Length: 530
Image 1 (tube, helix red, strand yellow):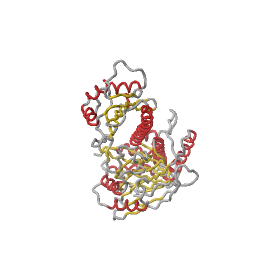
Image 2 (cartoon, one colour):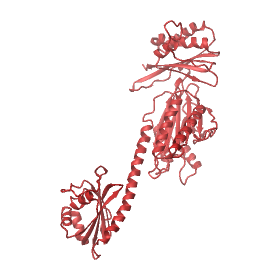
Image 3 (cartoon, one colour):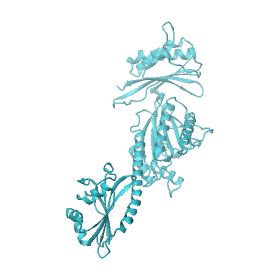
Image 4 (cartoon, one colour):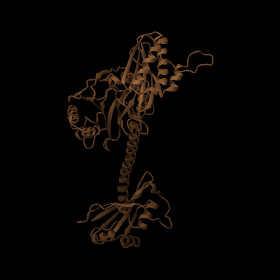
């Protein structure tokens, strides 16, 4: 009969071979496992600090295997200091032992102690080579597992740190999200989601999935998420945004191929919801179809044009507009939620519809219900889930004026805006808002084309950066011209060129967004909710 005992050394205290020190240090490892063929003995030992022994410390310091008889002084001293080990040695009649260091790539991971007992012949010198070869092979496996665990932990930490920790507060949608990494064998993937506030109280929803797993997928995900946010700031339509993102993925693929790391590919779904028109514009690049549950209780899968996955190039994307009643629930997700081994994708869609139809007290509870019904215990792929319940702005929160292209209309427009601000209880903002409206309307009349429209939007209050409720006051001026204004510094003798500078100084944000025909200049003031 024989047995083996393992003592692990923390990675920070790994040793390299060298001369035996005069005073061996105390062993800082843990006795983590035991395997024995002796009848009635437990197969695994509990994790505990091993007894101080010159056998262990000398083996760690020299990196050499040692053969000992039970009568050796060091062995007797080791047994006496470890009552449990001494009791087992007496019960099994141990007569010889081999101590072998566990080494891989120059680092000592631990020590294995082989004991031989009973009527079997004692260990001989010839057994040293066999045990060393066995432990060396096991050490390679252990080191690979340790390195893989470290890489997975790094990838998962990076993945979670790059996902939004707190979704932004906005008045258009109620949001809840979940992210689940894949099982250890599959590795962390590149799934991501995002919620991006846009101009005009609109909100963009993004869900994407990078091909592959591991650290490279997480890094690619971070670059694509940053690119999407930068493109979203330009207020591009969903199909145009995916076209630009496709070009970015192609350039990333060229960089990766130069490094011989393989191709880069991804899928993405981008949606923009407007609470004023209650319309959602969606486009997808090879991504799973979103699911919609309307307030009447019906749940359907939105039929969007597929679009090629990102990275192929040369193929167009198509956007679809969908009218969403207030209170509609939109579910965006990655394929890891509905696809798995042993289950067809249609079964996944059916399970998702049933989970969304369950009555839940909140969106957070709805996310939990979906995850309980769909993904397996150990998912093969990452799971990203984004649930959004739509809100709508009432008619008394939006004021619209169609303006003729006549400079005389600026004065009447200022008067109309002042009256509307009085109706909203915002008289103290009248001076600044009227000045901003006057500059934007004047520019549209002077440089734009008919039709010209002015719109004021006052959404519901939302939580600010410090939790203080705030509400934005949005001013938009649209015309049929595609020419964009540019902020510039007027010279001393210039009679004009200061209008946009005043707008930029008096408001928190301003910008331009283009439509199929024309453009919109918008400016936003952030007001206390009171």
